[in-house]
Length: 214
Image (tube, helix red, strand yellow):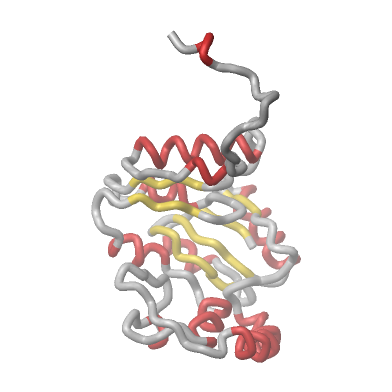
């Protein structure tokens, strides 16, 4: 899979027949999915033509494409065991799929997740349903939505990613920075949950802090 920055019309015309557009992130940003050799050849050609391309680690699994239908059939059997009871969705639930099971009034079921497993992700449509001044938290291994949201017309949205690859900070520092950004955005993160529970009264060997208070 690979992220490509290219206008839709150009993308549609040059995309090979054995490669699917897996994610519609914006009018000029897409993710393609397909056989590894085909994707590598296509992205190399685009890079040689000066087009911005970013390869995504997916374990050579072409998610959101026609090539995983056989895997989806097996996966559905396991999901039926886990999702034995249907659950209702919140009114705030937004979907990036256009299928019938994406209707918020319908309960979550195996078909809902299977559709996401196989179908393209239409993030460019879902972003227009996000309320103004909303806070979005991206939970992913690539954090590719950050620059997409910033480049979209929804500039009133505060968006943070829990994980940012290729940074000098370690994961703990990155998480703490995100918590700080959420606090600045007006949320109230319960940071006390990050620490062990304090047992009172404290032990006799606990150092005094009275001399530190001025």
